[in-house]
Image (cartoon, rainbow, N blue to C red):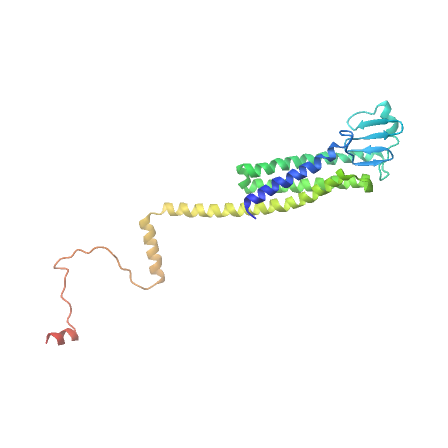
Length: 250
């Protein structure tokens, strides 16, 4: 897989995780159409609950960041989660927005990897991989909290958190593989730059001299020069006589 392909897959998967984790946050009382669970007329969400009575056309909602009113105080004492835990354990649901915040940061980091120069920095990719591991742990913890409170009554927005957790686990693998590829590419680039710098520092004459000396060191052959020798009568010596030349002259 090419380096750019790794980066594009990272952005796409983080976008899917972003969508999967924002839907559980839009449950009641933020949005009346989405719920995490429903039990004994109570509809539960991350930030509160709603009580619905179709016979009396009653619809009462309570937000966790607001104090109980006269209408909600009566029902707060009767609330039980599908796991039969009391409403006091609803504070554990704060893990869901924390995991979503970590996912948002990881999503922004993935866009920086693709469209900025930081995508070729091994340290930046390493930080994003470690951050994704923390996001995976928080996402897994948020799903376990939802499963603890709502057990088999967990609605489909809660199961989306499980899907996002699986995707984040695969994202950890992709980012560590991307970090390995970026580090290898940076190493090859640095070695190539060092070789070019070393070649620029050496002159052509010294390069040829070093090559010829290294060649003579490992071989016993003679080195011949192509330099032009001046020609004159003094430089021309008579050939030595041998058996063949003497016999030919006689």
